[in-house]
Structures are given as C-alpha cells and as structure tokens.
Length: 219
Image (cartoon, rainbow, N blue to C red):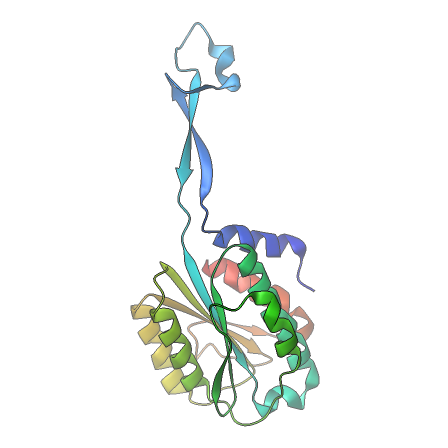
C-alpha cells in the first residue's frame, strides 16, 4: 500500500505545469489584504501574481522479469502494482512514461504513446523466466530517454538481482553524464554497487513506499 499523501507529493513534484506565487510589497497590482494594517506608513500595498515554471520530465521504468522474480511469488506480486502506481501517478502529473521489461531479452511493454491505464492488464499477465540481462535493459532505457527533449530524464529500475554489474554501473555513470538519473530499487538485494542512486527493499510489502520515497528524493 502506497500512502495517498506520498503519491500526491510525487505528482505535485513532477507536474510540468509549474506553480504560481505572489510577489508582495509592490506599488501596483492586486491589493494585498495582509498589508492593509500598514496603510498610512507605506504605499506598497499590492501584490502581483508570478508563474514559476516547472521542470518538464520523462520517466522510463525498467522491470525485472527474470526467473528469480518468480521463485518467490511475492516479489513480482508487489513489483507489478508498484510499477503501475508509478505510471499512473506520473501520468496524472502529465509526465511522459515508458516501461521496459527484461529477463534474458529486453522488451518495451509500454511505449511513450500508450496511455498508462492500458498497461495494467499486460503487467498483471507478465511471466518470469530467464536470466538477468540488466545491462542491456538499462542501456536500452537510456537510449529511449536520450531521444526525449525533456529537461529531467529518469530511469527507474525494479530488480532483485544483477547480471552484469560492472557494465550496468558503467552505463549508469554514462547516463549521468548525459543528464539521466538512474535509480535502482533492490528487492531483497543490495544493488548500491550497481546503481549509485539505490536503495534496498527489505520487506516486499513496503516496496511501494520505498520506491516512491526514493523517487521523491531524486526529483
């Protein structure tokens, strides 16, 4: 279960519509009622609305579907709703998203153009098998993000293991130099040596809260 407040905070942080603020202590604009107490002492009783631009973002979620994810069914049973919750929350914020799955091979389950709600059933029908081809998956996800024009590009990896740790870490470092933030969520597994920006989930039931909190810190 992901707290509604945390989902709301993520949505607000990634909204690319920007925010509105008031610049106070001005001689013209709308009356600032809070400044009326100073009437007679100052002529700066007005405020003016200003817009603060948001950061446009694009996010690719990379989901491990290797055999080990199915060895303990609760791993996939929790990873799937977390992946969907991320897609749904970001969609509400107007953030373009894609979803890549990997085992021995890499597949695009959700391209950028697909609405988030259409992928839910596909996620629930995913099978687990094969090896952990994490390097190819991260490299592919980075390639998708590099073709985007957004200022903030995030690659979010949900995995319970490692396949080519050295190559994957090098790819993460390359992505950082190109402006991509890669986040690793280790499911009952330490992945900090692979993903510099990473966290371990010790209880799969807490995966959603851990994943959303990590995304919040990276935003």
